Length: 441
Image (cartoon, rainbow, N blue to C red; front, side, top):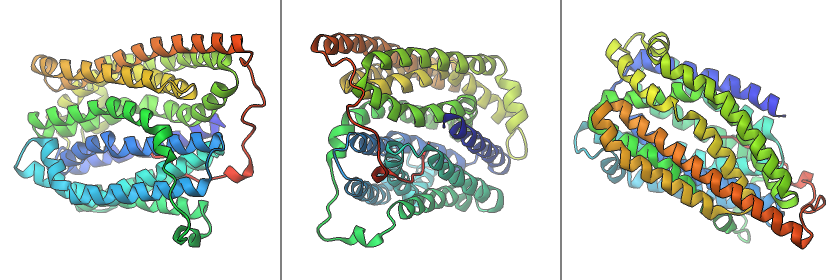
């Protein structure tokens, strides 16, 4: 299963890579591109966090058979509608807070937020549908829907001449259409959505709230990047976006496959066999850190030629390439910590030690916030992303120490109570949990 998912993720990453190359060649570091980078940071802190929380909560409740799929998906739809309305209505205030500027960049970000409100709704809805699919172990379809959304985004940038329509409209339409399509395929009886007796189930917030808080703290580094980058100018802000895309390309394929497989796997082991969970966590950590470490080293030393080869075409100038190379070096040395943190966070969720993830994510955010100003003053835009990498390593390291200790204590506790291994606990997933999802990642 993980091989098939990773293969589809490879295609998704390839077309996402093509999209960035075409975007750079056609629109360079223009104001629209810089605006999209800025609002994507805001979405990473708000929209993506909520989508992840909804997905984690839905998957957890379905695997434990504590709620019905329909009730959980109604909650996902309600959350998506609320997000879209809030983003559109509060676009101006959000843009001003993000850029700290009352000029053209703030106005452009305001426009971008309104254009992408429908896409944000799609991301949240996809989170809920994705959780249902993870619970049913339908990972291949999840990856396929993600590929379709990436293909449509790429096609819009290639074909459409208007920067706003291609970037804002193409992304938003792709997210919304794929989310609605996946929901229709999943819930084949549309009348059930208009039932006066059916109500959304809000237990998702109870289950996923702590993980959402941890993700919020972890993702807030992107908001810090965009806010500081905006102060350096639109070219630097756009370069942060391009540098991030190149940095995550080598590891994104591997992480997307692992992320889809690890959550349901760890949840079951956390319920049945903590000792085995700990062993698998250590083994997968070694694998992830080793596999991501090599491309990270290469990107540090080969940042300039890589950016020149990939992006320096058309509207993307040599000065833009030099700035993006600085950004890429700052990101590259923190990449292994992202993969490690993803695995450890899933293990913490499996044994319900949410507080440990919140504490470690907070420590990482504090580190980023403390270092971003002095590092930016010393290294320019490369210091912005280096501060993010430093925070990622602090968060991952602390999370690993805390979760590893918690796993050992949990194993000892269950052994003393005679519940260290319960192979029949929780049962296996049935056809009632079958689902179709669009994986936003």
